[in-house]
Every structure is written in structure tokens, then in C-alpha cells.
Amino acid sequence: MPGRLKRDVAVVGVGMTRFGELWDMSFDELFIEAGLEALEDAGLSGDEIEAIYVGNMSAGRFIDQEHVASLIADRSGMTPVPCTRVEAACASGGLAFRHAVLAVASGLFDVVIAGGVEKMTDVTTEEATSILATASDQEWEAFHGVTFPALYAMMARRHMHEYGTDREELALPPVKNHRNATKNPKAQFRFEITVEQVIESPPIADPLRLLDCSPVSDGAAAVVVCPLDMAKELTDTPVVVKASAQASDAIALHDRETLTGLPATVEASRKAYKAAGIGPEDVDVAEVHDCFSIAEIMAVEDLGFVEKGEAGEAYREGMFEIDGEVAVNPSGGLKAKGHPVGASGVAQVVEIVEQLRGEAGKRQVDGAEIGLTHNVGGSGGTVVVHVFERAD
Ligand code: COA
Image 1 (cartoon, rainbow, N blue to C red):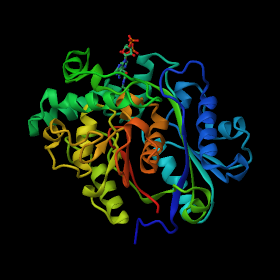
Image 2 (image 1 turned 120 degrees about the horizontal axis):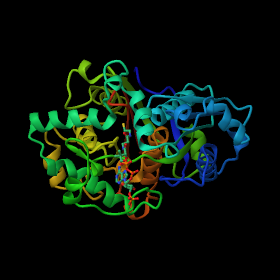
Image 3 (image 1 turned 180 degrees about the horizontal axis):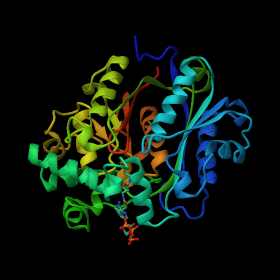
């Protein structure tokens, strides 16, 4: 069946740095810390790694360094292992993970590291905003001064207009995610916020406020993948990749069929559910791409957890809390855990693997068996969805 992996693949090791303003660590040190943690977790040494895939959006602009794949292989003492950089804006990490999975599923390699890294805080907010805007359509959007918060603000306005989503409902995902992040020692923002604080925080792009936005962050994440048979020898708790799916769409918002959701999320999740043989109702825990509050609202609808336009009410009822029907962003999500853009997609995998192993500590989702990651590039030009299951 198209979309089905030809060989079962599992995650056997996970690692990540803390996320935040990490002025004491360089780009390569971030990757090395996450990679070493993942190797140690897998009980493997660097000599056993056959390939590395690394998600990175824009080291060239953030730290003036291109050719980062080889830099990482060199600085981590892994040369001559092939190391490949994968770029799809904020979906770079999710796509790097997908390519690692596909490489193992194809039989090309057995033991592969998928990582992601970004060092964003060495530039000013103005520069970061301009760098991030390179992931939008230069000709039709960025050139005219449209920033990422502005693109998502337009989607928020349209969602409010079509479905009556109100300002208070828009604040509920960040409030939940900040609460979850207090239980995550690696999160950037480990403090609670209220609906009132979100609504009264400084305006960024109307109707989005400061506390509707994910921050600018440094950080790295890494995981080790290998065939399931091998994983069972290595660990008692392998987590199987049940599906890997990707979809693309127009970069420019005006070329999309809708502004109130991401068609690429609908398409990627449809393929992922089919390949995994499950439906949205089977998902226990999901890490979704909440770069802005409206992004999480659209994600839970596009992934099929609720009908279109019904997210606001579902948030009010607590459906997406850690003890809700489907726990969404127990890690704190991009909003509160932090969003080093190239690393975020891999950090989502780290969280889901810890959840399915039952190792997520105070933020553990009781009895989680099926997990999902949803990573978006830009305003929805790329979407990558993975489905995971705890192996018996
Ligand atoms: N959420 C909560 N607090 C935030 C924050 C956020 N997103 N961003 C910054 N802060 C806090 C800082 O910690 C700081 O707090 P302090 O005064 O207690 O130290 C304060 O707000 C000011 O920080 P500063 O860095 O000066 O904020 P800023 O105004 O320069 O940047 C944004 C705020 C929203 C513009 C910036 O975070 C941003 O661009 N976010 C979106 C990133 C993005 O587009 N990513 C890609 C998505 S597709």
C-alpha cells in the first residue's frame, strides 16, 4: 500500500537540550548534547551510527554558517558518516526524522540519528522576524512586510469570522501549554498564564498578542532509529513508527483553498491514519504545531480530533488537557517549551516517545499507547505527520 513503510522502524533513543536563550552554548554544542543523550538512552556508541539527518531552517542567516551537516559530523567526531541537512522551514526537524525513518525502512541503513538544531537568539527580534519571513512567499508576502505573526493573525481573524471563535477561546491553548510546561524541566517558559494575561499582553499582529506567540529559542533534539527487530534487542520499550506522511501546499496564503485550516494537515493526517490503520479517535497523545494560538486550534480540527469550528468549545471542556480525551502538547508545545525552528519537529518525537514509554514524569498521560506528531513548515506549505505506538 502506498505510504506503508517497507520495514518496521522504531525509536530506541531520545535526547534534547533545554530550550531557551542559551548564550553559553554554540550551535554544534547544542546538537552534540542532544545527540549524546539520545545515544546514551539507546545504549549505543557513535561508532554504530551509519547516517545522520539534521533539521535546520536557517543557520546561514541566524549564525552565518551554512554547510552545517558536515560541520555537525566533524564537531561530533562522526566523520566520515554521511550527514544530510534537511530544510522545510519550521518543519525541518519533522522532515529530517521522516528521512531517517525512510532510510531505515528502505534497508539502506540500520542505525540512524535524526536531529534538529537552531540557534536563533544571537540576532535581534527584528532580524529573527525577517529571517523567519523567508519561509513565506517573498514576492507576495514578505516583500510587502507581512510577518509570520501577521499571516497567522489573518487566519485567526477568518476563523473568528466564520466560526465565531472568540478572543477568550483563542487564549485557551497557550494557557494550557504554559501549565503543561511547568511540568517540563527542559521548557523555556515554566510559568502559568491566565486568559486575562494573554488578552492583555502587548499586541503583536491583531488579534494575536505576545502570549499567543511561540518565542524565539535556541535548542536541539535528537533521536536514534533502527529496525524494530533490532530495537527489541536493544530496549524493553521500543516505540514503533506506525506511519510517516507528508503533504505540501502553496506557500502564499492567497493561493490556498481555505484560510481557516491547513489543507496539508488534512492530507498528511489522512495518509498517516490510513497507513497506521487508525482514526483520530484512537490517538491518546499528540504534539501539534502551535507556533501561534490559532495554529493549535486549526491543528486539532484539521487532525480530526474535533469538527471544523468546534475547537473553542472543546478547549473550554478540557478535551485537550493531559487528563483529557486526547492530550495535546503535554510538553508545553512550541508556545511554552520553546520553538528553535529546526529542532521543534524532533523535540515533538522526543516527547511522544517518552509518553509512550511511560517516562514523562509529572506530565505523563495515563495509559498512552498511540501518539502523533504534527509539524508545520511556514504557514502550512509543508506538513509532516507521524504516528507512533508502544511496541509489546
Ligand atoms: N511568549 C511569552 N513571553 C515572551 C515571548 C513569547 N512568545 N517572547 C518574548 N517573551 C518575553 C521575554 O521572555 C521577555 O520577558 P522578560 O522581560 O521577563 O525578560 C519579554 O517577553 C520581552 O522579550 P523580547 O525578546 O524583547 O520580546 P520581543 O517583543 O522582542 O519578541 C515576539 C516577541 C512575539 C515578537 C517574538 O517572540 C516572536 O517573533 N515570536 C514568533 C516567532 C515565530 O514567528 N516563529 C515561527 C513561527 S512559524
